[in-house]
Length: 278
Length: 315
Image (cartoon, rainbow over all chains, first blue to last red; front, side, top):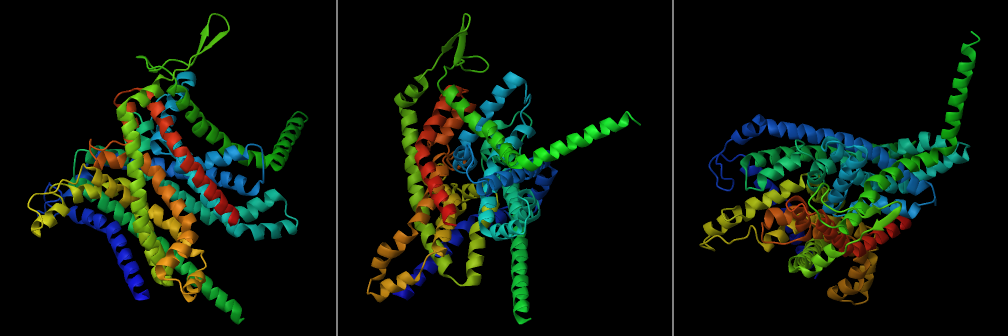
């Protein structure tokens, strides 16, 4: 009976992984297709990479998206860390329920609603105080910060409840003032969580199409907006080339991160062994 | 010299005061910044949508009537129109779209569960190294572009696409089966992009479980099926609910997947909202659609927050 079950589990896992990866592998294969019609193989060629790199539109969209993602990630990291700190360490304060509701709602809010509501806000603000006079980089960045900071706050919250507490209490017992504990103990311990939050916010921003489409104005086209406008009309081999490059960058990034984590773990095990021996 | 000294002391005093203020009120300061940001960019826009949803559509800029009008001196006139909601209710298009969205996201959630549950189970029960490799494989698609993963299916499902090619060359079919721009394609797209959202909460839940209970059940003579339904499934229910909500909520408001894979044939509420706003420029109706969508999702969203809150408490 047990054998039957493990065969079932094994085949389900293989099926699941194949389901997740075969479409992406095909995307990569067809990026090297000579033919203009994506699913019809016409021989090996790298011409679509040339087409992609020569397009000024693509470069402009990449640079806008990277700029937005960087500014967004930095602000979202700061705001999300402050929010996480307030929620875990400040006990009960006035408006706590409202605050925790507002910080976690963007996690589950449908993107169309977030996009629509922010656009209406920007239009109304422009009418009353004359800002923002044009929509584009600033409005997209603000919109992205608003939902990315929620993700950072979640990471910070779980780190604060996990590791930091004992050391903070120790510092407090030794007479450190709360602000000193925060600066000298809590923040350094939070650094890895903040970095993870930064990376997540960066990726979320690069991936967003809906919210950016709502709050963007004429002339500001992010990379997802550009991809979307092209694939709506059908399959495009240059988009396959772009997808291949993105998949490659992500795969390298994830492998490097996994390798660093693996080494850190080895290091820790080694230190533990040495301390046991001595 | 005498003139400089007082300014210097004043400066020092100011600095001292400032640091004093910072030292005693840093908590409020830490709280104030994100709080203010969310009030301005999350809560205020939401009330704005609510406000515009009860306005009338007019051809002007902005294309809706103001809610508060000042009639003569100091007499305030509040105007609330529920026509937009009545319009949604009476028009079959909106009601059908609404129901269709719920149907598609419910079935997709069940399909995600059927695929995700055995996978999460297998990951938890596998050896240390395999576990990490499998988890990485599940998480990796998260970091690649959502849009491009949907695009990948356009190539697979098209009339001249990979699947039809394969089936024809195998001699199983003569004519290509129409798959792209059908409801089937929307299901495939949703399940494909959201299945990791199902696997991860299930995995997180299963990893904390006491698996000796299963052995105990087996020792006491329970059949595997009985063990599954009386022990495993109830124990993993929090994970099932969390994962289910993480799929159901975003899938209901989905825009990209029905647009790219469903073409014009599949009506979903997120897509109707987007088109109402961008093509028809009917802001009040778009806002009413947004509020209606939110009403549909508010219960699942609150349930999810409740579960998450419990999770944090348990930690």
